[in-house]
Amino acid sequence: MKKMVLALAASSVLALANETTINETMSLMTQGVNQIQTGFVYSKKEDVVSGIKILESANAIFTKVDVSTFIANNNKIQVTKNINKNLTANLKLLNKAVAEENYTDATKHYGEVMASCIACHRIVRGY
Image (tube, rainbow, N blue to C red; front, side, top):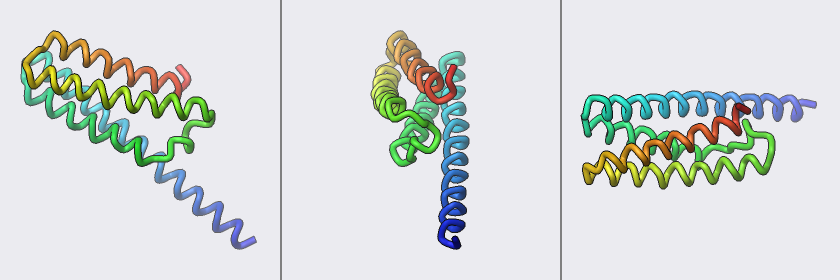
């Protein structure tokens, strides 16, 4: 009985830790998106680059977190992992376009970044 209670308590703590990580990660991603948008609107390359770095760091967290704790369906877990890979690739393309000061392609890649975000939210949040 004690082992069962300890196991339940440990799993509750881990679930809470994962939820905190997810909430903090989403907050970072929001910050990165806002930074990129501000950079585009005010023509500040350094803001765009800073926002990309924030998004890359936040997205990297999903390679370390067990997404099955907040996504029930195994098929959805794999799709989420694919979205994570797509987001990583799109952020690299966005970064390259900004480095080359090709803002037409940069905004296109930013749209692809946002499409990855929306795709994941549709799966996780169900909308």
